[in-house]
Length: 198
Ligand SMILES: Nc1ncnc2c1ncn2[C@@H]1O[C@H](COP(=O)(O)OP(=O)(O)OP(=O)(O)O)[C@@H](O)[C@H]1O
Ligand SMILES: Nc1nc2c(ncn2[C@@H]2O[C@H](COP(=O)(O)O)[C@@H](O)[C@H]2O)c(=O)[nH]1
Image (cartoon, rainbow, N blue to C red; front, side, top):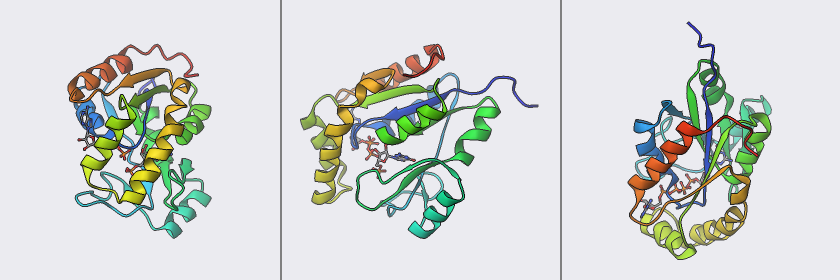
């Protein structure tokens, strides 16, 4: 039977390396209302261990642009200006919300602002790493990016940090405090009133 209530749409943004994926993995198990993750599409190649359909829908550029032209995305951006596309698929979001299931988007600042235009009552949360030095330490420690990519992501981080006040909530993911961050995220999501995001 269809639910009479729509689910909450939760948007989590923050610089690459701030810890979004790390906290989201834990949050999905504890959040109330229960959250399901929207799996984004991307044209970037998979990292070691990443699984198609779970971490991302990995698409060729041709397939991504075909689906974009067909109107299958709520938003798309070339996040780091490096030629790789990222996007939120309507199929990951619309049906779940209509069925009363809450959905979490882990997306960049530009994508978040585009979604808020369409869903003004989205719960928008910005996750920051504390300091620039800590962000760089985490990005390097992950050992997934080339030096050029790290530099591009650090440069993008400055622009993203400047946009944090556009979010309804700002949370610092302090070093070594993943569990505390997850708890704060869970509290914010549970207690959000549903007032417009901006
Ligand atoms: N609170 C924390 N303290 C110390 N290290 C952390 C913390 N949170 C995450 N990390 C580490 O920082 C690195 C980056 O985390 P993660 O991959 O979750 O970032 P992200 O924001 O999802 O990045 P991207 O946007 O590139 O996907 C990982 O190695 C992770 O283990
Ligand atoms: N606008 C969108 N941004 C997205 C989406 N999915 C992920 N992202 C952002 O990309 C960066 C980089 O991710 P990585 O996996 O290559 O390290 C990350 O900060 C996400 O916020 C999306 O669908 N739309």
